[in-house]
Image (cartoon, rainbow, N blue to C red; front, side, top):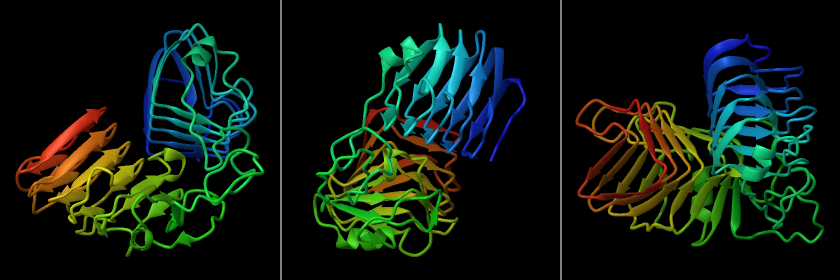
Length: 347
């Protein structure tokens, strides 16, 4: 969608889609001393280098979803400083893998890296830092992500795949990009929750979820995991479209083995996640742009003995009209922060 931006000393790109771009420096060229902040974007099916960095340029990559990059390395850097956190990089056939670089300073944490042809052999800093690999339903992490469908997310070419009956798949209201058809997919998130048993994982296929059955979701006291395809919050968005409803409601004595993982939840006209007399784990999520006109806690509201376990999640631009706690409101309840919570522009 974007191509060939100008050479700049500073730019910040958020919540955007870069797709089917060819040529060099599709985002731009970051000059000596330049600073770039790139977060919550989707990069898909590009064939050229996304960015070139030189001199003492500083690049911060956070919560980006990058898939099917071909021909050239995603980033070409010389003498730059790169910080990469919570990015998901899949099926890269580009020469030299994610980064082609010389003499860079790299800091990385909690990045997922799978189905790529190269581990970055032209960049010793990247190779030594490495990424953790996420296994697919077949227990492998190799090859192209579309080689085999094992009724799940399977990047490898194993011929011994067995359908994982613990997984339930939900089709999005609106797909971000082509997603392989899965067996036994559900049309809405609520229908999958209704059908789920304790111990099941509900996988939301990449795309936008909105409308009836995709908000005001009752978790029904079940011990289930609801997560995005590719473990990336940039791959799945649950959008309340400014309706006065929560996205998720935990009020049936759920415990911490009820988990929301790797989701973006936005535009709710009340608390995006509501917990009452129950427990809920929120991991690797982005909860943003929610507005609660009649109560505190536009992002997350807890009351009546509720409890939340929050890990590696971001709350941004959540606003209340009455009371305090734009991001999180806790009344006669408790919030446990395991690690990595970010709260910004919430009031």
